[in-house]
Image 1 (spheres, rainbow, N blue to C red):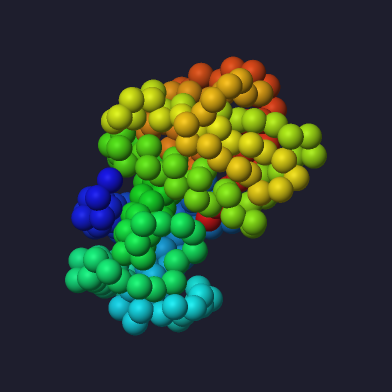
Image 2: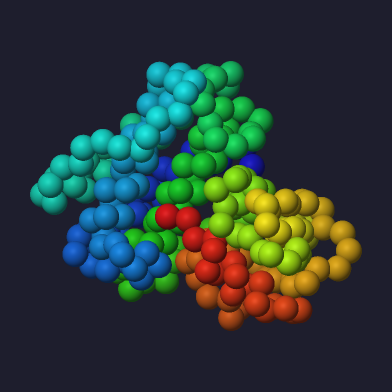
Length: 247
């Protein structure tokens, strides 16, 4: 996907998130994040948007904590909408050769932040819609495939991933409707951080396959596995559910 496509997804999903949060009410529980109410979801996402905007606008080259003041309930949703708009504007205005800190490999700083914030917002938009009791708004196969790739080959190859196994195991993930044919990942799970091959080869202890959209929701722990085909050792799916959640 292109950077401008990520920015457009971010723009769209941030608007949906704010609308769903307003309709659900700030006290509503957020089922995918059991410790959260909608206010926590809005506070978190708005704070992350402002954190990301700082790197983009100021060209910061060093990491910084995710923190900042949030307003009271009366102005929280307006604050979120402003946070979201600032981020979209910053990404839209940023030069293609933007240089700033980012936390896993990417073709450019701009593409990293556009991609990362698009998926951050899409996942939390699902949270807001779930709090409202609404089925998640659809995502395209291209966007969902990219989100699975970011999760597997980005987040869970970092040292902080908790997906570990004393006995080396392999989990294969196949998105059957990916735009360029089947997207196929092999996740090697051991005592170390997972290692991921984007073009899977050979057998796996467990294989999970289905549409990109269903994989996106399930692997980000925002949707069920009952629409996916699971073959082999299903305990690897249970391990993923236990160890992989990212807020």
